[in-house]
Image (cartoon, rainbow, N blue to C red; front, side, top):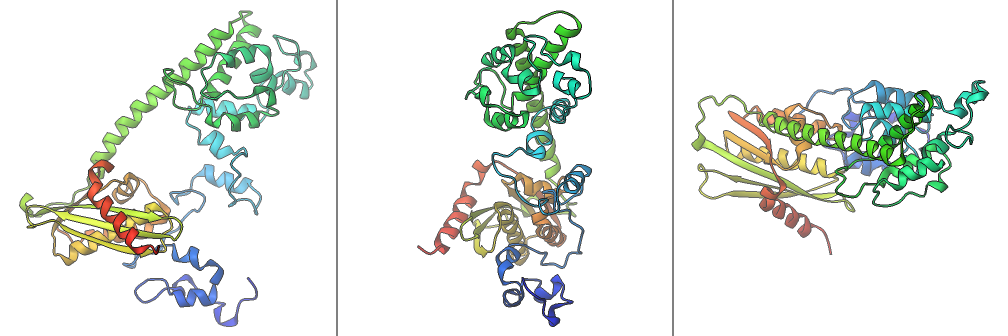
Length: 397
């Protein structure tokens, strides 16, 4: 952005904050005008939380060896660049895929030319095994899994919602990209990507024919792949149900009551409405309980909000500040944002709201008793409507 002025050589982030730990907009406009919008959308702690190390390659901000390897293996000028929608991505298409670790490893082996296909063996000097066991054409990954007549018959039996034009596939990575949205029709019971399972089944049938001399019909191969995919989908659905129940219990983090009775407890429901175009958010909260004669509603508009999650976290923080003002001592807080509740409870972490979460925990210590719970969006209609109305009234026509 040009030579740094001598007066700005030793500046730190703290020099761009006011004494209230808010961004100094005038100072930012003077020093970093082209980045002012992005900087103002970063929400630091307002209670003076300690600094911490953040790893930018993950959404949680926590370092993992997988993300470290990915960052180190990418060219320096491409590490932080988003890939095009139609471009193959190791993270999106393999490692973050919704299929078993075994299938992820198998896809990795195919893409790295590490399995014993004829073309791979030929490259290593084993020329006698270059042909396809079924049609004797050169056995490449594309031929074995997509263009061989046997493979085509298998794919014809897979109940895809939208057919994939296999003849146009030139590389295996292209096929992976095309199968991103190739969902199976009901009542197959498969809600995830079917590609790894069918490819694995074709590979197993091929090996059975080579090593056992026993052939399988395309129908048998397709059925086995669908069955494996269904079993995985079913087990994951059951596992997620159990995890959600466990997380709900853990999300209800309640401090010791210190003699607080249920009559003194107040319920707080929070929500936020966010506008992507002008980065504004309407924050709303509703207090109710036997201690209060009538429900207390509040809302505020906040600018420079970079995401819906930040808006939800800001709404909850504002509600806690209001609770302190109202001298509420026992509070049950409800939010329909599970990511936020899990972050406050310490189950997970989200780097964009770390400062806000630290403020929420700090403010919570001033109450005698407090809990944070996740509940359904359908139960939060009143706070949702209040947040939307606040945002609507603040956006110029």
